[in-house]
Figure (cartoon, each protein chain N blue to C red):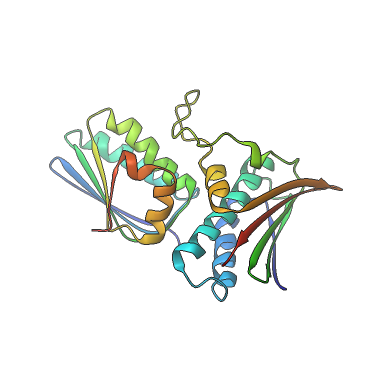
Length: 137
Length: 106
């Protein structure tokens, strides 16, 4: 197994760092740029939701992202101090513009669910754990 | 890479050149500059986004394009995204934007 880890604080300023981390470490494992971009987008959307909605962009909150390549599978783990949200239960497909706010809503979660093969959300100790799986074959 | 944004209004058309990454940090800047330019140039009826150097788009970036289409489309403004890279096109297509606005790699 190959493992890459990134610790970061819950501020949106870290989103470019997160996606460049993903792009850099997936490059040797995923040659197709469209596919590599899809995985980068899925990870960024996951982290953005936790940073902005779960932790209210509070830089005192610390998160950890892990990418693990096991055989032909990519496992993405996000360890988050905020309570878990039901990522796998949001309605699909999203409303492009939400009727209540007249603004786009749910697009990021929709992308995560479209792009990943499996999503597991659980709480262990003081961390929520988001575990996303993608077959690389 | 931070997003670089150039707006070139001319008569009833506006060309917006996007370069870099359109995400939750840069998307509000795009919306603000579009709003400001359309206020200063009310005759604009078509906005063409040149995406040749747009390397990345997140849901926040796609969302701001949708919001712009909804808000400015009511004023009769037409939207077109050109020279869109395959990575960016794929995300726009997954979100359904290719069904509500013209998106091409031409």
